[in-house]
Length: 358
Ligand SMILES: NC(=O)c1ccc[n+]([C@@H]2O[C@H](COP(=O)([O-])OP(=O)(O)OC[C@H]3O[C@@H](n4cnc5c(N)ncnc54)[C@H](OP(=O)(O)O)[C@@H]3O)[C@@H](O)[C@H]2O)c1
Image 1 (tube, rainbow, N blue to C red):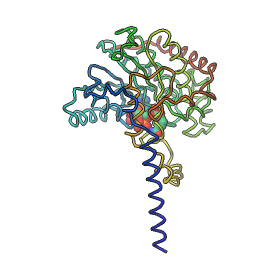
Image 2: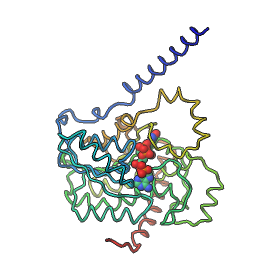
Image 3: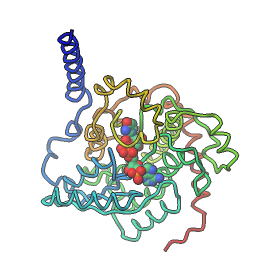
Image 4: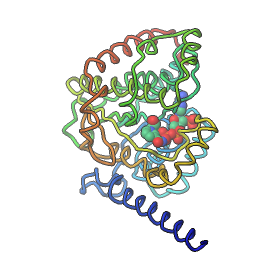
């Protein structure tokens, strides 16, 4: 009997690891697939500056490490100073022979003033930003009112990254206008998204300032972490799609979407303990499909390094995925334009806020 159980367990493990191996080898891809072979030289990113939001953890950490290892100047835009400084020290000692540079800058996406200060610093230091990677996000954080009076999840996952992008665009395009044809100067904004966005719904009220009564109403709806996350990511995806269409025509800068896939990171920290127990039942399935942070980061790194990424394209598994954006709410151009306009009107109001610049 025990031999039978042992044999069963061994076959199940072999099956799980077989599928996992297949996924990592043939499905998930690695970032080198996205890069021109002539670009495989060491320190290929020397002289280029990348901003990575949420670079102290998970996918952002892997992205920052790989860009640095390849000679880039990486600005780690994070809210956790202690953790980010410790990471910087660790990376400097691990890769002491690379010509990269690491800089910590404080950024809290739940606070518009923090975003404005971050951008002011970039502007004052006259940094020539090559690529902005909007990676930071939360998965179903508590439904709360932020200091700016927006719902927390929508501000961190959508309004904050949108404001950061809108403020940085003129700075990014100021240094070298119209250099899209010059591979070395090809500038990009990468929005890290999720395929779950296609299951989200748009609550237009949340794109505006709200009050405590709305928060109470939202809490009463008892939405799951996943619902809140999907909707905030959908708002961000629709905004990005419309913005990328406008930008391509005017500024010669590409804005693409990168989806890392289901990855084991701290993203799921707000999932409740009972739900975690429930999810543990799916452990064998997760073992087959859950990526490590390094595996999850590959598409984002590929988008950051490749000279071929295009605007309004979603990259997944280290290749363009035309199917994901071709139907459903994520392909609704009217919704996209509406979300863009509402977001811009909200951001315009924020920009008029009196902000103490120093
Ligand atoms: N993991 C997945 O399965 C998965 C799947 C699809 C898409 N994604 C996307 O991948 C991206 C990275 O997520 P991850 O999985 O690497 O999760 P993670 O390990 O939790 O990293 C998220 C990062 O965002 C930062 N962040 C959260 N709130 C912030 C705020 N208010 N201001 C500034 N930074 C803030 C976190 O900082 P702290 O450490 O200070 O909290 C952390 O550095 C996200 O956009 C996520 O939507 C992930």
